[in-house]
Image: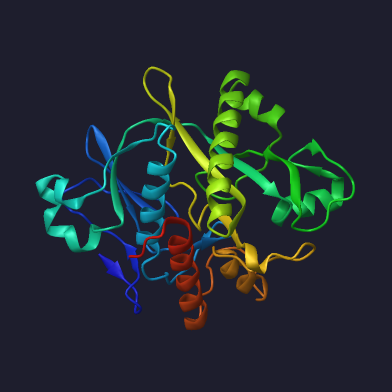
Length: 299
């Protein structure tokens, strides 16, 4: 296992298993009839992985995903087991490294689409709106202000690239890529989850500005929720107390890291710059704050 100087887990190594697929954050091991997901403490921004991590970040992502899987239990997901004591015996020697940051999940066929739902006008959606008057290709009214709540939440998908940048697509383009029936199913599924989650967040004093989901297909064609869900990596969380229309509210997610990187003279191409200690510590606080606020849990 590879840790950085702050104790952030950057890379896992389990010689008893085939080499994992390493995503931006997760190391995924093939267990034969299932997969082992390990959420490391790596953090990415602008599709680049930073050289140092955020301590406990992987545990926060896992704890939040488990909370939401339970909260939106009507939505079938890929989770099989999250207790390391129930993992295969060959993994027991790695209990300390895997505890709280790993899940055994079903094998599915991932659908190559980032299913983004936007409830508020911010980020890249705001840039598109200012330039074209549209959001995700949808025509919307002319008088929106920055960070304003949209009249209705919008499904704005993007392609899912193995390497490089994902690309935003319109709903019509998504239909061409994966088929109209499947695209409509993903849209309905995503919007329903967003609605339930946003209502819960509201009760917790948090605005769920936008989020992204991933889905996969079982052998019989049934579509289920996969990967992480409603975490600070995949969502934009704004404390209601800090929300001011017309400005970018401070958030409990990795926008803080993006904002820091935007202040640098960096071309957003690898290699990414190391994050300074104060940014690491503040980001960790934000992730832990999101976990406490939304789930009532701590690590």
